[in-house]
Image (cartoon, rainbow, N blue to C red):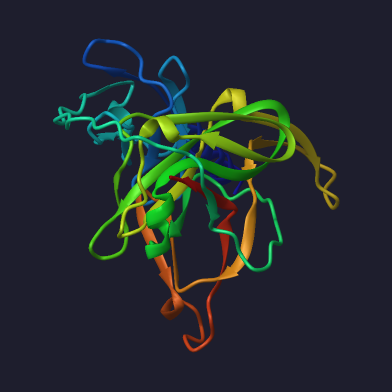
Length: 291
């Protein structure tokens, strides 16, 4: 019996050691690619490459890793072969840039909810998106000036990405409206930050749009805490990644979350009683429109 236990222990240690995958992401010019979103295919497990392109993720070597970053083609690589991953730069055609005359004499904040009851929690590695439907009255303030997001952080400075998505014909998040990452930083505490996007010349699409935030699983955003189990008194190290984006608990017909390397839609039909209105946690994100 002792020999069997020893064998199982050795197997467990072997699997644990082999499950830590380390690598680096570079482009075709051999330059590191920072803040790449890296997912274990079909699993709710992800990480982010550091500023120097390096990453660490715990998964089995036979799993697939999905690498995605704005401006680069998405790539799927076997974890055991991901020590050096090269991403191909997207060869998209640049459309003619038309700089429209903006007056900015009007301003309209959209996305507010009836009852603002903010909550912050560790939601794991995923991208949550809030849908902004189009309203004909936006014709008077059709440009997106700022994104307002309420965050909570215990670090002096932490960063995350903001994404803008077009809407697919089926109502899901589509292509990104920006051609490069929009990385922002926030300070310690609970704050409502206003992030200027007027230079991107974004207009409110008539099909609406999704705005999402992406948590970056990087060392700069990490806070480690000792946690003592009240029963066993054992001490473990808990890793938290900031900032948290606060959420409102609201009624919605659907909500989209990017996890397991793909967009997932939750609707009323997914709950026990479809006749009930679905209540979900939606990120506290607003848009400020201008003319």
